[in-house]
Length: 254
Image (cartoon, rainbow, N blue to C red):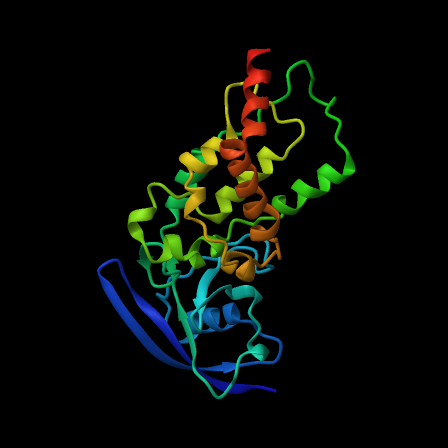
């Protein structure tokens, strides 16, 4: 059954903007991105929006719907109150380019700061062997579609622009955690201390584990419980536990 919905869509650019009211027809089974496309086709041909797969796997159509970071293609209209206006705004943590499109280059800069996987010495391509349990642990984090909703909702990034130079955000701290727990990563032998880097270079200490990043993840990755908290524990052990400290010195001397 179709009905008329009231949409309030943010229109503007880096110099400013405002919410614009639209009344648009909603059909059964549609998602918010369908409505945005209908607005482009009928009332707002110049409305800028980023999208690609429309299947919740590319992470392109990230926005804020009624104040909550979401993928527009995965937000069903049937889950929203038809009596209330649907407010669609760009992600607040990143600079606006135009309308619903934001400049997420901050995230790509942070990605380049994380040293990649270091192949183990003496093991050739095709010879890697891991326990299935270890595969499963890191595979969860590999589901990330880089929608950057976790980055957007993290108040350390969202509410404090001054933190951006020193804080990687949950998506990239999760990447550090994934590499740090990888049994074949040879970073330590290459002189890369991922735990120290997480704390001193990527701002792990800024995270106060509110779990807001986990709550908005469309892939249901347990970012806080399975990546950030264990990484914090390992980093603290590495720095403050006297037995761990002594063991690292003995291994280094050997």
